[in-house]
Length: 146
Image (cartoon, rainbow, N blue to C red; front, top):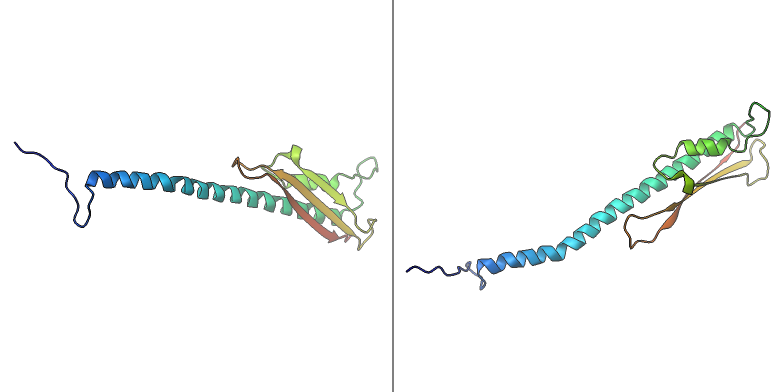
C-alpha cells in the first residue's frame, strides 16, 4: 500500500497546501487597500474634472461679459442673465439645479476699464460614502473692454 504524504518545498517548513492558504490571506489583506487606492484615484479625477469645468465656464462667462457689458434684448431692456446664460452653456455633466452663478461688478459700474467678476460654485458630492462633500469654486475677473 502506497501512502501519499505532504511534500515540503526545499528550504521551508510548511507543506504546499499551507502556503497557498497563506497567499489567500495576504491577498485578502491587500485587496481593501487596493480598492481604496483605485476609488481615491477615481474620486480625485472626478473632482479635478468638475473644478476645471467650473473654472473654464467662469472664464468664458467673464470673457463674454467684458465684450458685451450693455447687451440688451429686443425690448431694449438690460439683460442681467447674458453672462449667466453664457456661463451655463459651458458646463456639461453637472447638475444645473445645484449650480450657483454670481456676476458682479467690483468697481460698481459697467464702463470701460471697470472689472467684471464671474463666480461659479457647485456642491460636490463624493461617490465614496466616507469622504466629506465640499464646495467647488471657479472664479474669473476681467476688465471691461467694450
